[in-house]
Image 1 (tube, rainbow, N blue to C red):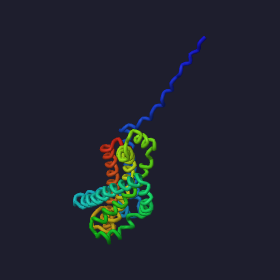
Image 2: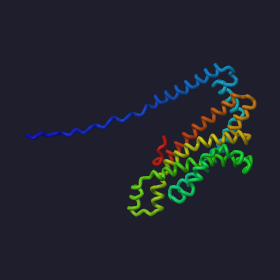
Image 3: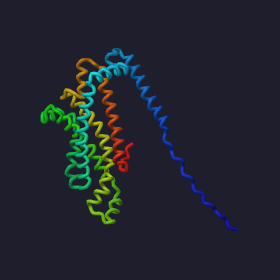
Image 4: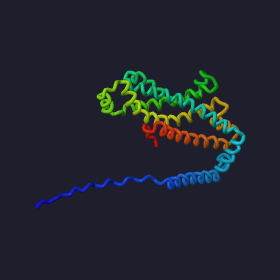
Length: 270
């Protein structure tokens, strides 16, 4: 008698379904509402409410600053400085990261300087940059570029070093020359890492430009926060702080969206 043993293929485990958009939106809104209520309660419980304005007072002041045009001007000035410095710093950092990844000699030559300078905050250079470049836009843009370079360079280098050796060997075995391996294998493999570095660098760019505007500027969100302190206008200070956070959040989301749109197959940003 022949016994037939039937092999049973194990069914794959069900994939975890992503949360529905409506549910995710509800959690999002509930979280923001809870924060605003806690903010209002903390403001009302503070010994001197004028020193800790609530969301209602902050909103009213926001409307006043928008109507007189001062907030719009400050936002535009800060974004212009951040945008120019961020683009310049990202381009330089990406180039440095590629050079350090493609050549061990370049990496050994630049590694001491990159790892030395990246620990010196851009804020520490504000006074020096002002002395060298004056009080105009140049020092602010230069400082933003400075803090952007290192995060992008190091992440690009990490992407270069994370490329599987077999991927490069496969390209060479198919007859690809060195520049073709670089252009079609190594360069695309670094893009995702460089984009992650840009996201990290953006926070440093916002931090640096606000500090620079507090010390050597007559416009911008940093100037708004600093000048409001002198007049005890804490509601205007809160407006500057809230707008700064919202701008950073929106810029990060726009970077992710642009990355997915332009470099969709290279980008893994969430």
